[in-house]
Length: 231
Image 1 (cartoon, helix red, strand yellow):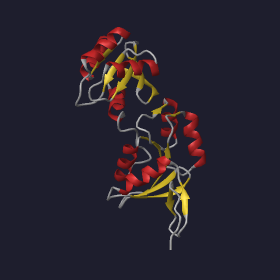
Image 2 (cartoon, helix red, strand yellow):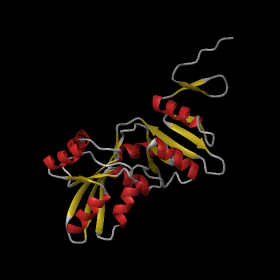
Image 3 (cartoon, helix red, strand yellow):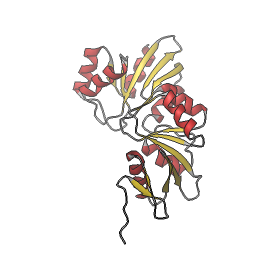
Image 4 (cartoon, helix red, strand yellow):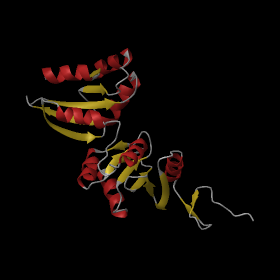
């Protein structure tokens, strides 16, 4: 006997189907490809991820292009038991206030890749965006740095012990282009240094030239380190 299944739906297990948003549907499908974890739709944007020998993870899957503190607070109000807020879009931008809020209430945050890694590692409540995690920590632990204010996931305002302040933008591309540098500047405003945080790549000569035209340096950690020393 034929049964009708709505296109954007998942089975409830009793012959009925629940409508789901596109990002939840894709998240469930992608998790199903992993042998270690399974996932089920709970309600709205909320899913449960089950991994052997690790705590279950309640994750809200957002389709937003940007996640502000208000948006993060709204998700937690709607799903008070959530362990992780996932920005499913690759280009999702996180506001610094959202990051600070989520960390303060014990909710992990970041990309879909961050979520799946955190579920496997059992640290979803403390996980942070894997693209920027190491670079953020490096700045905070650097001996010449007095304070770090995170304006966005990829924009940090650093105050040095000398009193100098540098606004640093991060680009994770393998080989950042001139357009990538200009787009960072246009979207987030002027920066003093564009840091190519991809460990395997380097900025293109055109990217460096674009930075010079805008009035900022473009480089890797070695160049940024020298800038921090001389500032």
